[in-house]
Length: 150
Image (cartoon, rainbow, N blue to C red; front, side, top):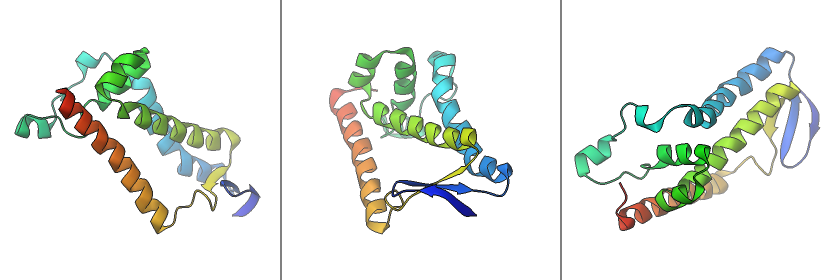
C-alpha cells in the first residue's frame, strides 16, 4: 500500500481496491453511527434488559449505569439533566462521534485513514489513556453513588 499523504497526526493510505477501505472503515462507522442515531429514534422506556446484572446482585449502580440514559438525553437535547445524572456520558458521546467522523471520512474519501506517529500510541500512552478513561468512569461512578442516583 503506497502512501498518498501523511503528517504526524494521520496518514492516508491508497489501497489497491475500495473493498479494503470498506473492510477497514465500514464496521466501526456503522456501529458508531447506530450508537449516535438509535438514542434519537428509540424511546428509552422501550429498551429491553434495562437493569444491569451488577445492580441486581448488589443493589447499587455499576460504573456504566446511566450511559444509555445519558445518550438518550444528549440526543434529546437535555444537557442539564445529563450533566446531573451522568457527566461521563458527554465524554463517551464525543468519543463515539469522533470515531464515527474518522471512519465515515475514510469511506467518503475512498482512502484508508491510519493513525500517524503522534496518534500511534506506545505502551506508555496506551496505559495512560486507559488510566484516564478508567478515571473518568470511576469518577462518574463515585459521583453517582454519592448523589444516590440509580
